[in-house]
Picture 1: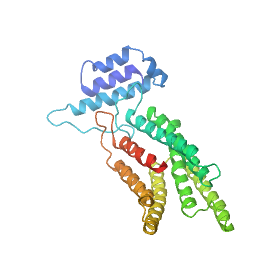
Picture 2 (picture 1 turned 90 degrees about the vertical axis):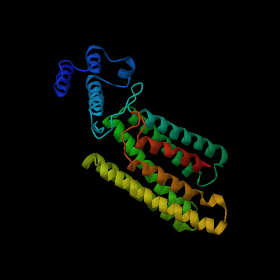
Picture 3 (picture 1 turned 45 degrees about the horizontal axis):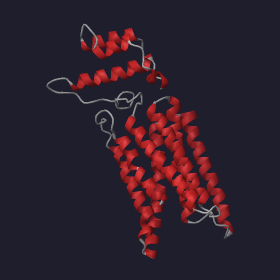
Amino acid sequence: MQKDQLRNILSNTYDQPNPPRSLVLLTHQPLALHLRLLLWNCDSECDYTCQHIITLERQSRQPDPEAIVQFHGKWPFTRLWGIQEPCSVLFSLLNLLAHRWGLSRVHDAIPARYPLRRYYLAFGYLGTTSWIFSMLFHTRDFVLTERLDYFAAGASVLYGLFYTPVRIFRLDEPRPAWKRSLLRAWTAVCLALYAAHVAYLTLWSWDYTYNMAANVVVGIVQNTLWSWFSITRYRRLKKPWAAWPGLIVAWLVVAMSLELLDFPPLAGLLDAHSLWHLGTVGPTLWWYT
């Protein structure tokens, strides 16, 4: 959309002889350097400005202000330094730092000869990668950043499912021999599931409903296993730490339920999705302890 088209559309929308001041500034000033560095251009700047002009106009209608609506399936966030969703970026960074801290603990506290160490490290590296891509996506929503975010998150969630039976049933142990065979088969199954997941989204249909359902199902399976594991260990050992995995899972379920609220961002910044990201920082730190 060109700037003169935007001016005409908004003038007709508001039935005003002149466009709003924010539009005048938009159509007469070049984009700031920090916006251009984050790949904002004429079209995306016009889109952003339109969203906020329309939102402000709807909310200022009297006597009955109208509700905030979504644009392109997303709430109209107030950007900060060119970042589209500042709170989600900040909370993703906190999760990234939590994984980095956890990785340092694994490197320092767990001997290299311990069989499960490599699985802990893989968990940390995948978690770190997924939160990097989450930061990129919430900074600027492009097709590429969206796909990287979704695929990395899917890999992280599916790795959780892969790792859960390895730890619970100690499939990493060399004896008995059937454990090694089962581990190879389970690894192949998980790799095939991830390849099929990516292929479906990439080659068949970029389906948001399917993607969410797939991650929820995988999460439910591993959460159920961890809950069962925690309950049985606690009953046997009577030690508080034996219940930790189940409590961490419960915390994550509560954090994920925030997504169901889906309210317009408070002050244009804080929405349910960003709160979900904030809610996963604590369980991540706890997990590494």
